[in-house]
Image (cartoon, rainbow, N blue to C red; front, side, top):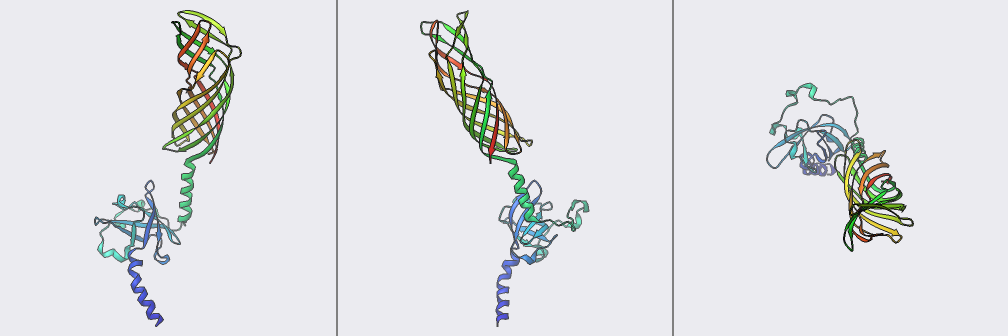
Amino acid sequence: MKLTFFYILALLYSPIIWGKSAVIKKIYTDRDEASAELLADYIAYPKQHLIARFDNGKNCYLQIKRVHKRLALLDLRYCIYRHFIKVEQSLSRWEEIEDNVDFVSLSSLSVDKISVKENFWFDPIEEVEKREREEKLKLSQGLALSMLWSFANQLNTSGTFEFGGNMQAEEYTTGAFGLGVEYFYSKQGTIGWSGGWSFEIQRSFKYRTINFNGNISDQSLEGETLWLNMLYANINFTTFWKIYLYAGVNLSLPIESGQKLNTNPALGGQLGLGKIISGKVIVDFNYRWVNFSGAGEYLQGISKWESAGLNGIVLAVKYLFN
């Protein structure tokens, strides 16, 4: 009785088992391969043939290259309609539908096109994990802390005096050390982004040179200092050598002390490149335009700035926590 019941169950479930032998889980278009989950341990073996059947009546021929437990690596090279294959595509055993499907026979292909080595064992699970690790290595993502040095040491301003007349001035200061924090996302061969905040320690101004209606003079700026906060956002593109190019915008948030400068926030930008080293350390080099609005007090009077820029090269070293 029990044996009879078993045969009845086998007959009921056999269409399910044989009609749907495997399901596609991942597709690797760059390698003409796919991974599949088998629905029964005993139906799969290397070089076994599987068929994908599509709603438009087309069929696709696949071959198992490697198999381990319920996972298999499939060869898509002989699948003419491979572009129809999607994740969760059902696959059937070739032996069950062999008489009803037309396909390109292996016998019609030259031997050198088939690279399956029967004596070389391959674990599809390990291969999938390996490829996932390779994809992860291409990705650099996470919070980054940075140390930077700004070589910008000259504030160039131009404006108009209250009583009339134009002026241009060069305010001489020093470079500055800074710290920063940002979120960094970069993937080789694709577009990424980053954004964050940096803070540069005090710059001390020395003197300035003024051109007022063609008359050039020097004035002292002793006691004038500037602390620079910066918010920024960038779009980057990373090459396959993990060198990335980027461009972005910034917002200056200056804090000055003294009586002769009155700086206010303004938008600027930067262009640069960087190199990702061992996935953790990033060396970054850019040219940055830092703009201000505001006014300055001169011997000739107060001039409202039409433009004010502290532009120059910035070198940074970042550590990525990914």
